[in-house]
Length: 346
Image (tube, rainbow, N blue to C red):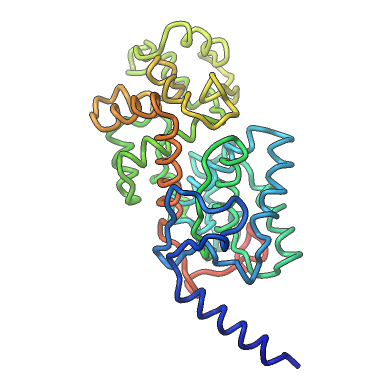
């Protein structure tokens, strides 16, 4: 028989959690502690969601991340990108993890994701370990969000108190993935429009682009800048000349599409503000990086300069914008499920 005291404790705990959906309580957060960069409890998400049902969730996520990133430092950026490519399609619902099936057209086949999006095996490993300890409790959508935060912190970046409680979708949107994720050759207006579609403003655009302080891009993503930027067989005039010559050795005019180059040549595995300094020097790798400055939109230009000068300002805004992005259209309660296998609906 269950002791009466245990029932009372469970009811009190449930009442406590339901009554405090937006408050970050010192000492109740888990893992990295409570970042001072602001928490978010809107949309029915709150940081203490797994406090009683799976208190070790963040420790398990981080233990897997530490090993994965040690094996391959690039994985941190891949997992950060995975969260971004999930949230921008139909909200942060782990739809990006679903494989093709009779009812699912996988987002993994979209133009931005095919032969490019990575980290699925790491998510699988985290999920398997969590299922051993807390079966049927932690959603894949929350795992993706936790992995993005953990990867940022392990790369030397900021911490933030992460609202949790996202459900997993039972659908995916290949069309949405093709249409909503900003392509690397985006103009500044294209970027602003695609971010606004998600409820994100120019400050979010510039700060989240700063995630390119870690990771790499494939030659196919920047080849146009090197050889035919405006359909005139000429390079992008904003590229610094020595950097341009170096990129040509990595990315030939013919072939080599899968050759890779760091998005931040100064510190490719360290989460810092050198990405913005490089943009000021004409060494932004992607067109979508450089247009934050050269697109002649005053707000984004000024933010690039501000973040290049003040790293703490960038790190604070990055954390705030990650919370904001992570709150896009979550599936709450019965609107979502907790998948047993992140690649398939239950």
